[in-house]
Length: 371
Ligand SMILES: *Cc1c(COP(=O)(O)O)cnc(C)c1O
Image 1 (cartoon, rainbow, N blue to C red):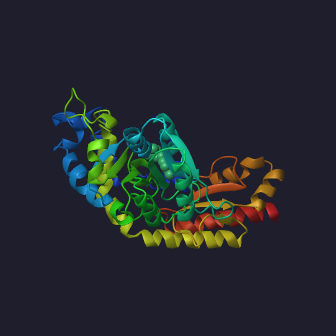
Image 2: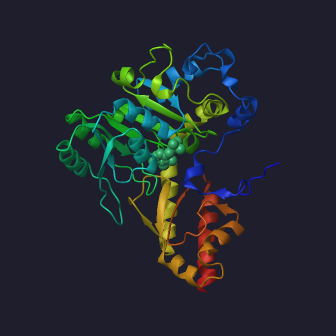
Image 3: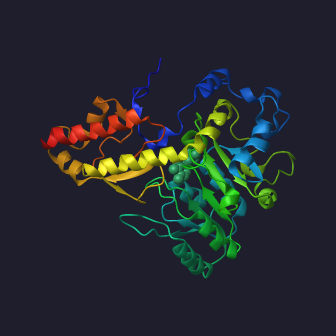
């Protein structure tokens, strides 16, 4: 059997904390593991399969959850971004993205043949994306060519900053530029509704934030975009071109559906997650490990900076791997091997006891090497 080394560790890897399967999803994974299992009763369109209840999920549950008119399943957040960009792309046109955007936003834009204009953040130490800056960059870019889309990362995957997406949506709306909200770290963790923000598209990631095995994502949009983004093949009349006909067609989708009742409930307890993150951040700062990004913080993903750990790494026996090894010895997983000076972590889903355990581990490690 292929064993996974860190399976039973306390996991603080931001990529992984929101994607841990529920018990229901684990069962679904086994039940639906065979290839194309969901297609037993398919009549030609994935989202219209009634048994298993994909139709109800895609056409009723998801739009309600995302606060949008129309929703679809995608291969992941990036596939959602690419589908929208590709559908809206025109020759020599531009997409405006925030400076904290994920690499896959850039790559999606490149693949769609769009020019990319970047809205710089405020830089060290907060890295905020300001609506005024967004406006400025839009105005400059409009002089160069047509802007077919703007994208805001909400929150970004480096600092966990939540920009003022509503104000940014107003800025875009005033210029008739559709806005895509990349909610890879929001959808399934915290309450977020497309209509409350006032944007046009939203994408989420099942394996990152919706307790799913993945790869899988969700895409929501305003009704007015349906015809453009979900236009159909001329030959295969019910196949949507940007989705290549069908997206996730198997166990990944069933884990998403199986976890959904739990996911819906957990977003309502979001304030507890924010409190835990803030507590964790304040205690880390007490031992000289500083949190960058928004403060007080509004998300479980946090970026830390520590000269102390960096100094230790220069003289520790294991060098820059000392932190990884010390944490591993304490059965804590999630900080990349070799990082000491800058690293990110997530407290999502950790119990209060686990939070204390992780904090204590950092205290012990520093004491061990400084004492
Ligand atoms: C993880 C992440 C993605 C990519 O998500 P996938 O579902 O794996 O495509 C995109 N954007 C942000 C901000 C992310 O953190």
